[in-house]
Image 1 (cartoon, rainbow, N blue to C red):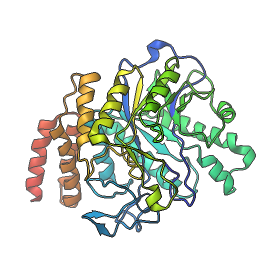
Image 2: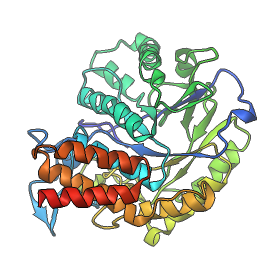
Image 3: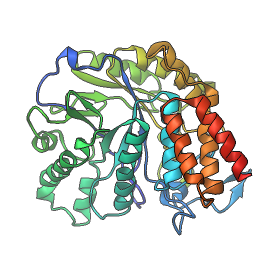
Image 4: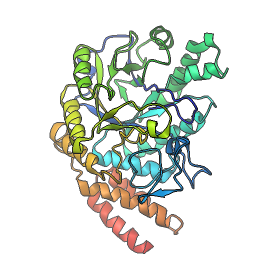
Amino acid sequence: MIDSIRGVVAIGVCFVVMAASRAAEPNEHPARPQVLVHYMPWFVAKPAAPVWGWHWTMNAFDPDQIERGERSIASHYHPVIGPYDSGDPAVVEYHLLLMKTSGFDGLVVDWYGLSNHLDYPILHRNTASLFAAAARIGLKIAICYEDQTIPKLVEVGEVAEGDRVKHARGVLDWLRKNWFAEPSYLSVEGRPVLLSFGSAGLTDREWEEALPRGADAPIYLSEHRRRPAAAGAFDWPTPKDGLASLDRFARASKDWPFRMSAAFPRFHDIYAEAKVHESYGTIPDDQGRTFTTTLKRALTDGSPFVQVVTWNDWGEGTAIEPSAEFGYRDLEAMQRLRREHVDPAFASVPDDLRLVHRLYLLRRKGHTRPGLAKKLDEVARLIADGRYSAAREALDRAEADVG
């Protein structure tokens, strides 16, 4: 996770809003874990944009060039649909329907705030567009606010050094008045859930000063360790420790009011090859066993929330989004493990995932054909509702119409 389109890469900050102002009662926890996936809305791509964005190029790769049958991108892996633009409605629909069909309850979105610095407005626009789509499909959203943006804004003079807390309060107040009030926002008994990633943004003291108080205050989770103002913390892969870091988090979090366990498929960043900075290290994929091991553990350790890291951080190699290298393997594992450990009635199977890709291809192939868009909207509704047989029949008819 890195600060987008910049000369100096910065570790980001993620929030899932959970209450920090009072201890949580055991009955506040969900009856079963809410399974979320971390989502990056920062990709800019042709032809939606005139240029390829930094997260596809890192100023070192050219997606217009083809190497070994794939576009040259800043990743060791390649999305099945090719490098995409996060503002493309067809891409958003494809991603969210795949999440729903895989068995996710929602997503945690990386968000850089409200300023006009760098590409933050693009990330804000793309994040805002996710709310209506998530509500339509039936997914929850939590915000991962990158508080590393605050020292960045101080550096360029947009925020005075003495106004760091004031700026953070303004951001949190905007969230309260806007996204926290959305029906699709992830909450526990009416309280929104917020995460912050890393420790290079606000200090512990600044977080204590910035967070609101009261019965509707966010439930705040910090990364790895529980900050004094936090109700708990969320875990994140650390390549230098590998899977051993899971044991450390389990020991530290056993008595916290809230915790969010992590599952991940691998870690294999491209930073050294892109000359951004040294690699953070590697956690091997181990032929899919890393994901199944960490996901099973997270689903069964009693955590009220599980976060899969990540849907689409292609630069760090943690993406479970379908890829040329791994296909749908990780999403199929998610389906299977949800059924085994969370929801025995979960009905989606691997073939249902392919319906979403077929829908995406039709959006691309025939979006100008009269009447087709409405038919495809109905297919999306059927998939979101879990009516896969009906969706398959409707797709067959639409594909025949397009030819």
